[in-house]
Amino acid sequence: MRKTMLVGLVVTVAAVLVVLVSAWFDLELESVALLGVGVGAVIALVPDRSPWMRLVGLLGGVVAAWVGYLVRAGMLPDSPGGRAVAVGLVVVLAVGVAVVGMGRIPLWSSLLGAAALAGAFEYTYAAAPPEVTSTSMSAVTALLFTAAVGFLAAVLVAPEGEQPAAPRPPRPHRRDDAPTSRLDDMMETK
Image 1 (cartoon, rainbow, N blue to C red):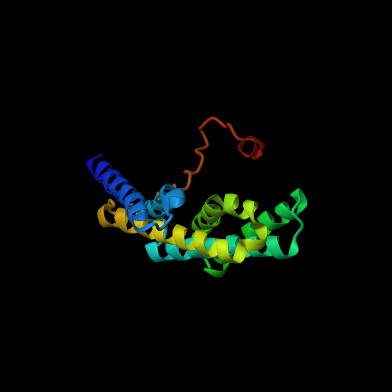
Image 2 (image 1 turned 135 degrees about the vertical axis):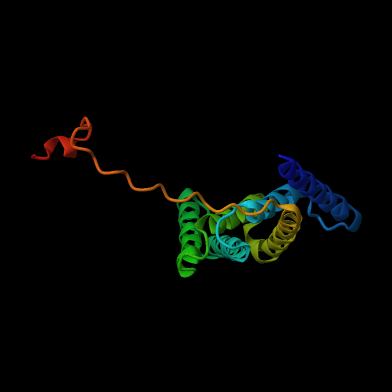
């Protein structure tokens, strides 16, 4: 419990500092501060595979979403069908990142990266689709910077990574005198 409170406190301080430093230096990170710091902290805290592979998944997902926005702006109509194709493309690319990693890159981290960029950039994109190349660069940079801050803050004080739950042991064989409850067991001939 203390470790969780410590991680929460450090991530809180990191998020507050991102907003304050952004305001002092006019970095314009305020709109993605919570999203980025939160995503970075999640990548640091979830005990699934190595932290580096989780980061690779996050980056791969961000790139997948970025490609989706570029394709959407350049080749797809601004219609529900065009948006659906773009979303499908992004998910397929995020899954592809995990598949290419051959089990080392968790799927959830690439999906999280894609969703994070969508959350950070969709409003800006919708306001001016033709400016996607310039505005997306700002969104990606802001998201990755704030995610790096959240990751570093959480990893500094994160609890030791727990191993995923061990697989359940196989069920013991049914005793002949035990009551049957499965259809297969009832159909056995003795």
